[in-house]
Image (cartoon, rainbow, N blue to C red; front, side, top):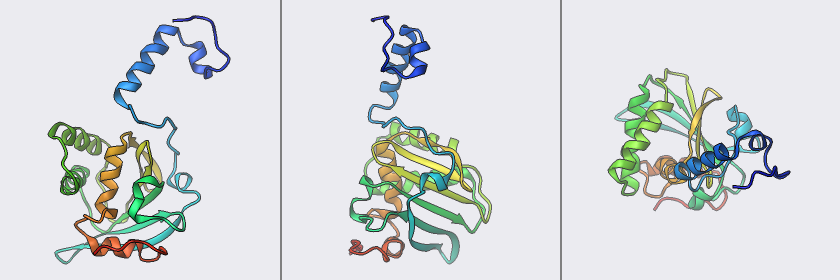
Length: 201
């Protein structure tokens, strides 16, 4: 590799030994081949600074109130092409839940939307389990879909971390926004205020 400093390299790479910089680049490419490199915002409000609440819906299961969901997006958000737009989904919990249970329920819903290889399902479940905390009534988890990058998660407005995988993010947010969702009425309620939004048949 050339050892002549380049003025176009980021400052950190100019000070990094060439061999170390090469190893870092190879490792990053192996783990996140389609990731758009960007530092996650530290707060949900920063991540959604130009977005507005487009819809609200409450999830009830067998008569139990689970959470209130709020969709944060730009006016004109296209629910039929949600995977191509940046948006946020905030869940305000109405009951206590274990983080591991949230992860397991999420992967189950994702499998209902599209086939997932067992190894991939295991990796995604582990990623969610490591990010999602146990929640109590009143806690809010906000997920932000970043097209081409992945999903970023916030607890009560503060960054928890991210799953830097665009395929994961599309399926995860499809739990609420895909026409194949298990909760079509909730989807319709979330997007009902959006002009021209596609409704679930």
